[in-house]
Amino acid sequence: MRPPPPALRLSALLLFFLCLCAFPAPARSQNTTTATPAPASVEGFNCSANRTYPCQAYALYRAGFGGVPLDLAAIGDLFAVSRFMVAHANNLSTAAAPANGQPLLVPLQCGCPSGSPNSYAPMQYQIASGDTYWIISTTKLQNLTQYQAVERVNPTLVPTNLDVGTMVTFPIFCQCPAKADNNATALVTYVMQPGDTYASIAAAFSVDAQSLVSLNGPEPRTQQFAEILVPLRRQVPNWLPPIVLRNNASATPASPPPSASPNATVVSNDRNGVVTGLAVGLGVVGALWLLQMLLLVCLCRRLKAKGRRGDAVASGDRVEGGRFAKTSSASGGGGERFLVSDISEWLDKYRVFKVEELERGTGGFDDAHLVNGSVYKANIDGVVFAVKKMKWDACEELKILQKAY
Image 1 (cartoon, rainbow, N blue to C red):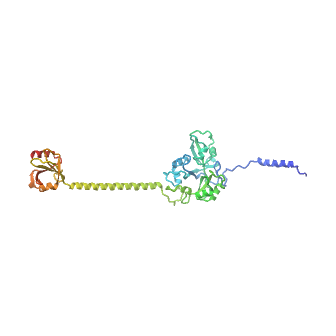
Image 2: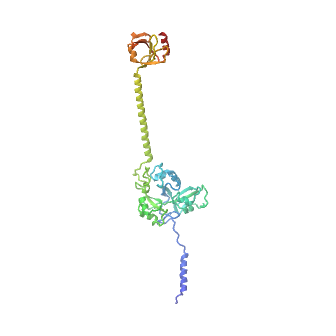
């Protein structure tokens, strides 16, 4: 049998290749049976039947970017979680203010909502002026999602015609651990930064680089801002990875999350503040009490010294026929004594006499010196005085004495 001519053979070969090209290429599997590593595409990580949904997952977020305030409450609002949950996941006080660029673990409720082929944590965001899917995904959410995934999750919205105030669901890429993982591993969505390698990321999370290969496949060639999964072992006492602990070194950790070991010892910053406040308050109260006691002691000593003084105040000029002196006390004796002279003209001028001088001049107010009633005759320095015990208000008695003498 004669062989076919060369032209016929060439035509047959071309027809064979055309038939091969006519068969459709197998599509990338996104079903729920895959067990091979499924790196994140523009639509996220694939859902898988060998994983349990929903689950607790985390995203590594760096504080202070995209206009989000350096506040745990603002970060929690962005991811639709509470400030307490963010603080708890990072062993921080709820009052702590993260530093600019500080890595934080943000807890996520990861699942495959509405039969989605990709796993994600839905985050509601209200569109503001100038916002686009791409801008929010790359700035505020730091590439933890992609604008293509946002378009797929919001099929009824037109990306190029977003009204201010429109609520948009942003899918934060996440994944649940495999059912066969007996170490209760949580998975962290990590966005690779310039200069990152599997080796550097493994060191930052205290895991081995092979675990990153097992979860994500070979290290991507174009690795900048690619989303990968990093295992987080939550059953060891110091469960936080070094990348978080290193930046939280200046902050006092709060209570560990429920998944952490009960043997982990941490101290609450709030508790330290209460103890410090009580110590300062007690110190101030003690100082005030001591000061009050010192003032009372000084006051008592002054009153006693004043009670022992028997200074007498007397008026100053001579009058014909002698001088007049008086002693005064609320009880009629003892206390302060006053000597008044020149009653006729200078009732408001006084000289000071010691009680001892009056007592010597009257023989200790002896009855032998008593003139009449409560008036005594006193001889002080060769000068004769009439001394009368009076009340505090002695004006009337002084007028009577002026008339009598």
